Image 1 (tube, rainbow, N blue to C red):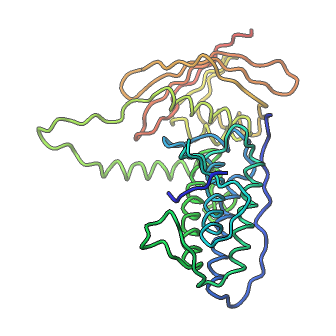
Image 2 (image 1 turned 180 degrees about the vertical axis):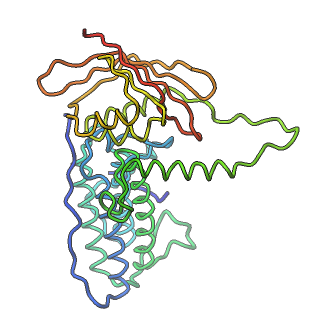
Image 3 (image 1 turned 120 degrees about the vertical axis):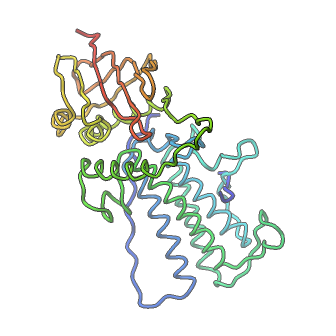
Length: 350
């Protein structure tokens, strides 16, 4: 990754949409590169728009990659490359910390999403001022690069930073899709086929089948390698959080329509037993929950490639009394991915 720079319950973050810029028939080299950099900023900002704070902060990879951190990192990188490199320092914090090499890749507890957005806007404005003031062949020096490569031009740095930001915008694409299913260049489906969740699930199953058909058989007589036939508590608990988050957003029908296997059932506290289609129908248009908590989670192995997650959930909606129940969700690995097979509620409030 490129070198970064060290720089109450808050609700959904809303960002301004991409700003319109006049189109010209011909642009000079610097303007073309600058335009490319701006587009990457806008793509990255769009992937944060509309999410609650905990989703912006939530790490979704083993190395902690998160949406808010990607924006902070991109801003810090621009501040360094279009500041110190060209002798144009800023009073803004650099984003780096000697005590924490990842400080530019997440928002600290005392940094709100609004703080990070304001920091990013300020860093981008400082970068724009540098780009506007210098010619494309203006020279600078990158002090953290090897000496033989440290001397650069503005055009080189523009291309370098735009490519890095495009990479992180791609990371944000994937994180946003994993968060709430939103996919597309800047909004839902605006450069993707207009398919519903069932059609996408069918497409994924097709790809899983193709991938499975290419798996190489183990060599004759060779010791078999252990396959990933286990699921851990953290993995399944994250899926349960994803499901409850979908219920709070009103998108539970799509989420569970994809997560449940073809023959999965849900056994509800009122005695109803619903198959996947019935679950989708019952959740389609159902009122969203306002908040939920999960406690006392416990994983129970259920044989090869299966496990049951047991926990206590409390959910609230409006002024109604909270709904509290014991939950058990049984998952099976299907083509290497956990799929919900049985879900059961046991009330503790009735």
